[in-house]
Image 1: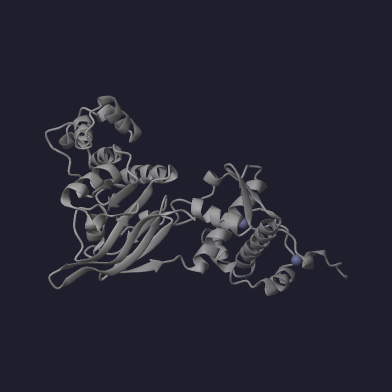
Image 2: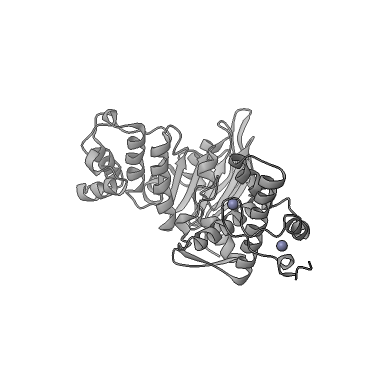
Length: 361
Ligand SMILES: [Zn+2]
Ligand SMILES: [Zn+2]
């Protein structure tokens, strides 16, 4: 297991009677992406400020990389911020009279280096090279946020903190910023994003929820994980059926932004193997996919022929129904329908044992 990069021990931050954080314990492993979820005013920003040594706790301790930052003198806290953390805020905090490149270079100056080329590379990385000479007022919200990401990365921080990083952005810019966070994670940065947006939370390795100053683990319910696995199996089956390679990028699970975690879970559960971007069924995975496809397509036949569900609604109803059609009753439904070979869309229905029984006339 990876080393612990951040440790909070009974951490509290009170403002008078308000307990923004109340005896919070937490460990974050090196390279982990942790999402702290919770409504605004739940203490999320307080947590970011404490992790970034921008604030001091009322009680308790914070370690980053084995250093107890809550015990550092002011000058050491400044050095810690320079060397170890990059912070991406919801409010951009760009200096209005400096252009994008200069804003990144100000951050360099803060880290006592001044290298226009390196600052430019950081802007290239966030796709802002052609806007380097624009003032913040000439940039859209999304562009300003990308400059902030470039600025936060200039010291190659071991810990990246992002406070509602997509808070004010439109969908397209949100995707670009999430893509940046994703590549930071892939490079091994330890990432803490504080957000109320499920889309951002879904990308993380682990989600915790902050409410009334207390933390609790959020886990994806197992039926939901099951549903995602089933969806991937069915999509892989259909891709192979169409003579296409089941590549991970072709699989789209509804409500999931990044299916990597789902696929990883499926590899761990022995349903699929991944060789590079190409997915393959294991023997068990193929059997489950076949069974799912069979049930889903039988449900389609059932709805279209026997129950006369309009075609537009059929697919939706059928894929919800496949879970309701118990494996036990699949054979009787198949028999009832006369062992159909094709679904209403013309796709083959994998046969079951019932279909192979000799028909006695
Ligand atoms: Zn069909
Ligand atoms: Zn049958």
